[in-house]
Amino acid sequence: MDALGLVLLIPLALFMGLLGLLAFLWSLRSGQFEDLDGAAQRILFDDDPKPAPRAPGPDKKE
Image (cartoon, rainbow, N blue to C red):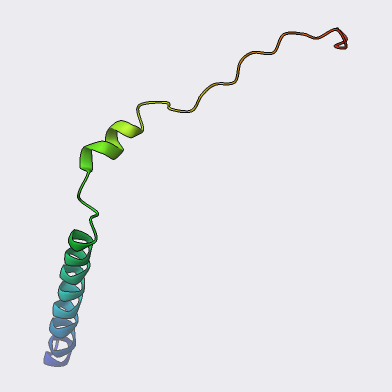
C-alpha cells in the first residue's frame, strides 16, 4: 500500500471513530440507557387483556 492510501485511510478512520463517539454521547444524553431492565422484563409480561370467550347465541347455526 502506498503512502497515498494511508493519507486517505487514517483520516477516514479517525472521522468514523469520532462519529461513533458522538453517536454514543448523544444516546447517553437522550436517555437511551436509563432503563435497561424495564424493556427486558416488559417483553415477558402480557399486559393486554384477553377477550372473554363468546357463548354460542341462538342465531348461530351449527
